[in-house]
Structure formats: C-alpha cells, structure tokens
Length: 131
Image (cartoon, rainbow, N blue to C red; front, side, top):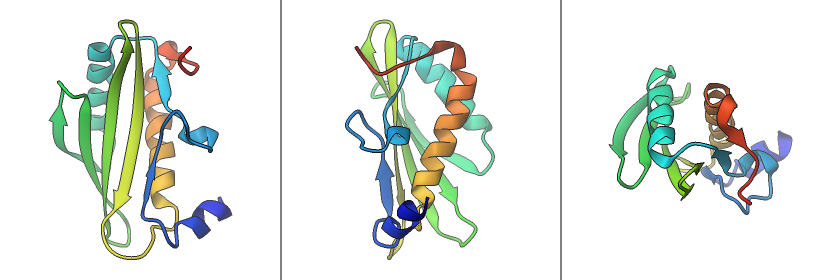
C-alpha cells in the first residue's frame, strides 16, 4: 500500500487489464454472456453509495461513473464489459482523478473496491483468467 501511495504522488490514474503486473489489477472474468454481465454490473453500480452514473453505452459495453473524494476532487471511472466469447465476459476499470498532482493511490483503492463489490454480486459466475 505504501508503494501505491508513493506512486500516487505522481500518477493520477489507474487501470486494469490482462497484462497488469499487480494481481489485484488483472481483468475479472465471469461465466455470463456480455448482455447478462452488463445488466448485473449496471444494476450493482447503481446501488453503490457515493458513485453517480454519468453515461452508459450498452452497445460498446461502457459505463462512466463519477465519484467525489473527501478532499473535493472528482474521479472519473470507466467500467468496461467485454464479451470474450458467447459464454464469458471480462470487466475492466479505468479510473482517473481530475486536477493536478497525484491521487495518493485513491484510484487504485477505488478499483479494488469496485471489483470487490462486483465479485460479491457475481461470485457464482466468477472464473479465472481467459483460457
């Protein structure tokens, strides 16, 4: 966590993906179709306190959220639902803070929090990385 805070002095964004070095930032996979995953993710995100859905594009699979921090900064978060194959979907998150300087690791913590909530809701469908 100290490393994230130190990196956060300079960086004001964080993202997940298959090639992420940090295992907590790897893409999350679910054994659900893209459409079903989209519905579950969207309904879950709408219920999380402190986040506001700004824009949603079902055809592309993107949900744009906004979160205000305690210090008054605004974070823009994009959640992407990607259809890997007809029965498997991946969820990736990109989070960036508006303003100058770094985020002290808050984007990292937001991504971990969102994944934790989504994994809890979709635990029956969670699967390991794409084969």
